[in-house]
Image: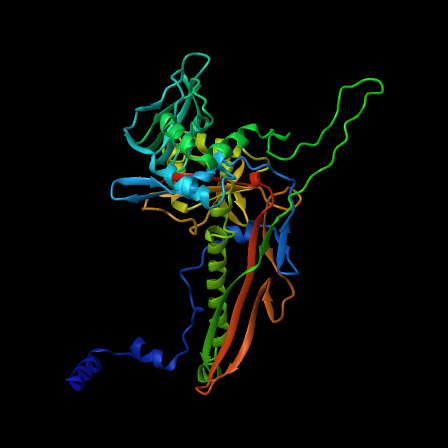
Length: 467
């Protein structure tokens, strides 16, 4: 059958076919291409600091922790319970430690009542008696206060893990000075003041701890929570000047360099015979290094220990007011720091922000950065990063940061001049040839990131990017 087809083709064609001619020609080839290579803006924009000893210590002024963190919850079907140990995130229970304390917190966690609120419901109302502690397990709510001209002003946006009304633990039952209104369906755990007082009367350890916490003097501090430095100004004559000193944290945080590694294997026959016109080993290494750099950026964003998403201070985490990322939301997060260098967001999040701008007939400027045209907001570039996760297909985050040691910002950490280095903090080491004639190369990259002061990094959370 093949012979017949060949004869027919030969009688019809009057010149050599391109298919046959390719067997005698040398094709022009591209280098091996890789779809997973991205712009890696974070690696480009972070100032990198050489960490010769493998560890970077961030020394700060002494800060008094107030214990206003977020709480965690567990669910069993439709029932939601607060994790007992997480109650230490409440200011008065921050130092409540020990076996007796654990037992008291276990019992206290069982006294919370679960309530459901629909969008538009008032959870608490200004002027009503303050007699309950509220833990927001799921949903989003606005903290409101009447404005000067009668309209409501949004003081804050509360979301999963937030709480309010912890003053009830001290026995205070004055009136609420704000209103909390659900803007989505909310699940709230509520501790009635009477139930807590019953618990407080039964637990000597809890009662003594609350009394000591209330009686503890408030140490002087500045608006950032740092130990105050006593100064004097505006005086005349020979006034007695205050004496002071700058106190430091006793146990500053240390960042150790992390590592991403892989073992590249190349058969010696491939390395010896198939190197024209491209060196096979070099191409294998090039693509492996690209993959490692991609992993490096992923870890800088998502690593639980030093990743930027997990290391933003709670005071620098902001929730969107309506869901999608609006100009108002970005203005809010910009206002919390000076000299913001750039935003970092998933490309779909940037598209969602662009849609909100178009809806308001706002058209942000573009700038050319590193040879690429990028969108800006208030003069701050918005850089795409597909390493920022999208949760449940429609929720993501936007990061904004100040960078550099001189500005007490976010910095990248790496180590230069390591053995067999082929690029900064990345080396390739030949591991030998095994009995199957396979060459092995250990490819490693060392890195980490540090946030020098809390306001250097901010995160806009729970950003809805659905169309």
